[in-house]
Image (tube, rainbow, N blue to C red):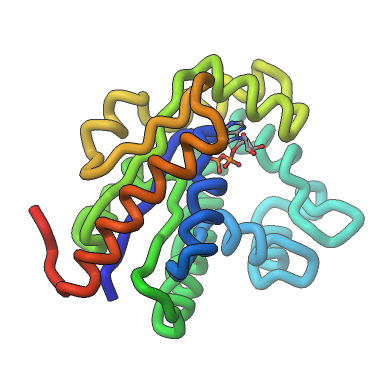
Length: 206
Ligand code: ADP
């Protein structure tokens, strides 16, 4: 299947773009959704996380206590490494399994840390970056999650800078503070139409 890696900073609009592509017939695999599933109540990662970090990082619902975990990995780079070493192979295995079952005109991997993780370049035909300025990221994430500016800053600082992400892109969708909903649909549609053609031709364009 023809494969797109879709990425962008937090709040850039990746999920919105992915929803549009799904509506138009693309298969979507979102690694954030997989991570969420693994750390939801009864998720396969809950027990090993609890064993590694203790019961304080598991909420009463049985899900991962995201805030507690965020605080822990912020304090301790070692804890971050341990969490990543645990979760990444699990996410990788589920991603592979879902990809083997995927049906659609092409396949989109939504990967927030695609550029950071390095190994995606060889796995996809094109990398598409959804891009927006930092102020817009703050506004959107604050409105969506109610996180403090400090917490959002931490997340943004843990991601590669905008320029680095853009340098890795084959395609860019600008979705900044001036981009209206219709304009985002139009920009996304132009790329979708092109990817459909490439998928049909079965080629890997340069
Ligand atoms: P990401 O998945 O990259 O974190 P989302 O797609 O969830 O970002 O978008 C973040 C928030 O901003 C969501 O609430 C979304 O509806 C909103 N949003 C995204 N793009 C636009 C836009 N062009 N205009 C208005 N709101 C937007």
